[in-house]
Image 1 (cartoon, protein in one colour):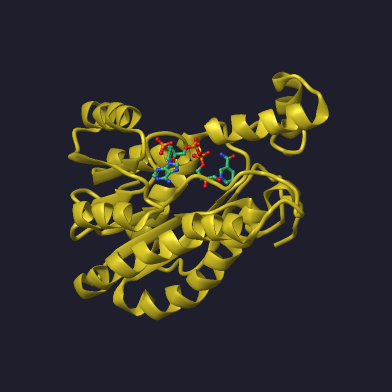
Image 2 (image 1 turned 45 degrees about the vertical axis):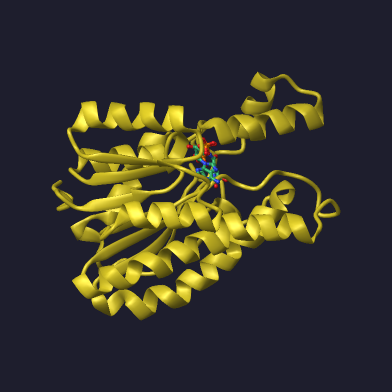
Length: 259
Ligand code: NAP
């Protein structure tokens, strides 16, 4: 299928590894020039060079913390007249509902709600003027079904979801779509970190902790960043212009719900 994206330009935040990288690679495969971002410059440049070598697209790297105002200014400048925005950042740490103070919530809200909103506000007006744009926010299955140890994520991502629900319908008439992709468990560093948390809390080995989490998924395995990236590229494609303000779950059947 031709995604109709050749020559478009995308800002993919937090994309040196994991799901962001999966999205960057899938967009590059469709012919999209990229601005990639992460805090660590070395891994970012290595991932960017692999994309240039594999797909022959232009890739600009911006090594910064996208959850800071200074970082946002840097990626916005590099993005220029971007057609596509993929919002992503690291997820908040796990813990107990009794652990978190105001500062912990502010940090989670900054990273997983206020940052994507700031980038939407910066880049969507240009997309509207040009009559075409795509925004995909990487959120979490915790929006559909709360994860007890990830209360900070449950809260911040629900806030972004509400914002997107309203905003997506205000910009759709100008050819801009905004949607959320909700990852369930995918095989990334983040999944390793959460496996480690289970292992430590329950006195299990890493293999046992992973097997325990895999057993919660009807598909019997973790998702891959390639599968996730392909879904993102489709949402950004010319075929997805009628998909507005949706929350699309990629979870191997993990969330037990009819809708
Ligand atoms: P990951 O494998 O840990 O990768 C995170 C990527 O984001 C890295 O490239 C990292 O590079 C970059 N990054 C992190 N914080 C950043 C920041 N403040 N500014 C710029 N770049 C930043 O994580 P992932 O599994 O792909 O997860 C991506 C998002 O999906 C997270 O919000 C996570 O909570 C959510 N999620 C993941 C899963 C899962 O199972 N994997 C499930 C549900 C939700 P640097 O460290 O060098 O900055």
